Length: 66
Image (cartoon, rainbow, N blue to C red; front, side, top):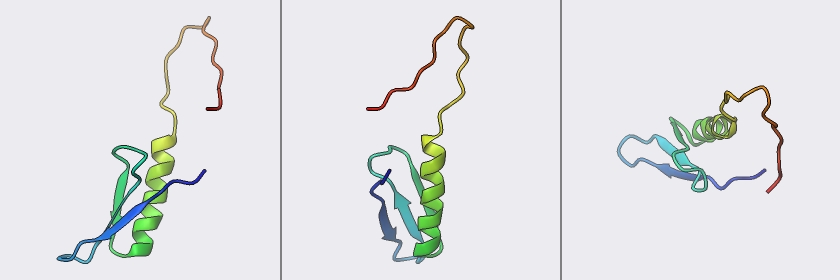
């Protein structure tokens, strides 16, 4: 799956900010553009990991594609 990523360099520090507009709150940064891209890839992977949930033994768990 592909996600749009916005990269922006801070003019004062030279550091790079990165965020994925379709994933609210998913952001990262790095000292270089390459580092910021590496870090946002990791942030997106963590963002998309499902949270563990507690369900009753009788619950039916399934997955759907949207």
